[in-house]
Amino acid sequence: MLKCFPFKCGVKEKDTELILTCTAQALLNIKKFKERGNEFYNNGRYQDAANEYTKAMAAFSFKKINVTVTSDTTAMQNTNASLDTEDAIKLYATLLSNRSVSMKKIGRYENAKKDAEQVIIMRPTWFKGYFRKAEALNELRQFEEAREFFLQAMKLEPNYEERIRRYITYINKELENKEMGLEIYQLVPGREICLKSIKTPIQNFIFPFSYEMQNLLYIIGDTKTRNCVLVDACWDIDGILQYAKTINLNVVGAYYTHYHIDHAGGIPPAPYNKYHVRVDGLAKLSKKLPDIPIYIHEDDFDGLLEANPEIEKDRLTFVKDGQILDISSSNSNGKDTSNVKFKIFHTPGHTPGSMCLLVNDKRLFTGDTLFKGIFGRCDFPDSDKRKMFESLNKLKNLDENILVLPGHSYNGEWTTIKEQKNDGPLSESNYEAWSLKYTGTL
Ligand SMILES: [Fe+2]
Image 1 (cartoon, rainbow, N blue to C red):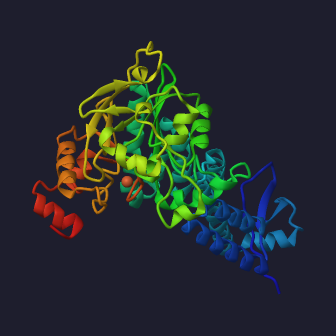
Image 2 (image 1 turned 30 degrees about the vertical axis):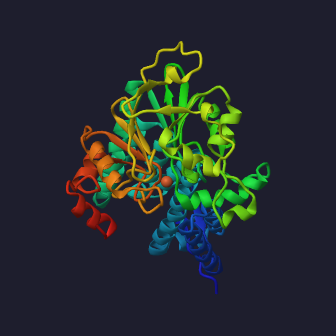
């Protein structure tokens, strides 16, 4: 015999309730879809995960009952099953919460928000609904509202305090950006860009590599002039330019923190060169926007040429350590004055011409020089570990409140100078101790 277990899903109208039922067979399917969804999620296949959670939810059936009619014996029996009712609500709300976070991962923030709102309706005392809604609002750049929902989630689940405080720290930085007239967009392959499409058959082959590489790309915009610059525009130039257009920003310049192919594009090294597929990057951008300046450090020019032999030196603008630029000086007409200022830090080590970009003395774009808890590899033929140590020492002297925005999301999508001084590669002032701790060798 099939077991039914229903639950209330909120009173929709006077004297009626909507209940959700599912048979034992349906429950087996729900669990199967949920497990498959979790597996896809853990493998980074967020759209597939969302589809599985949707299938699981579809296996429940909604039933409208009249609560005043006692002759509905099925409904009466069902509503008496209080334990099962609670479990069912939990299961459905968990599926919604899982789908919400999957939607967030693929940039469908409105959908993520709607699912989270449903979770709150179904389980108003469960922190997850508030947390998911806050995450979605954060991505929708509704920062004040996001902060409120994070705080509500924290009240309900003190174990999430540390995680939520981190979110709030970032939200406060975003609000500070707003005051400075600065807009920063962190682009993640698979979320905002590198989305497979029938229009991009060749790139579809390459995009999965971008997901694995966990690159972070940036658009830095000036709220007043709506001009922006790109940082490490790579993997999907059309997607990046389209994204800038969507957020109503006009691209007037581009910075490349170093020449590596996952940041500046080009012909991949062996054995991947056999596919004759080129990674989008500096070369494509320079053709698509021939008038914008493209900034890179000269010491990375040779490296850049290896994967991009057609690039001409005079198409690039070489930057120097300590140089200060602004968005208006990135614009060929040079007429706008901007409140957004860039300072160049030459930070060799990972590559000879690696550089970091300090914006308004408060936001540091570090490329592959510094990530959360680690620094960029120094085992390439043109890397130099000692120089990396010296470069990191240079960053150590910066204001501790500076937000660090790295070129990859290893360990996290952001950190601060303070965090890295307390517990990270900026914590060691002795080269030998630093080298042993982080590379295992002297
Ligand atoms: Fe790199």
